[in-house]
Amino acid sequence: MKREEIIEKATAHLQQLCTVIGERRVGSEANRVASRYAEKVLTGQGWQTRTTLLEVIDWQDEGATVACQGRKFAVFPSPYSLGCSVTGELTAVSSMEQLSATDISDKIVLLHGEIAAQ
Image (cartoon, rainbow, N blue to C red; front, side):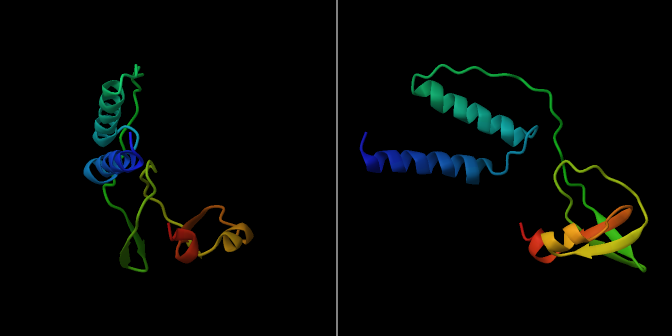
């Protein structure tokens, strides 16, 4: 197989996995679709495959807000974080250095700026 053909095939597989199927977090239908796609590609090349079925939960963002002094703000929860309804002192942190130097015990921590850029 020529180099150009290898690059073309690799690009097509990445396009399928990253764009067509998209995000494929563990437990999601997209993850199962991606697994079936990979199995089909590998068996099509003569590889033997084996599948281990795992019982995992799928996580869905059902929206979240933070209310402070009568105002509500949209927030972006981390995947697989559990919902909660809490009250407490709000502490804002924008860097790893600030996080390391801040006592966040029993506080609601708002990550913003550099630390939340991802």
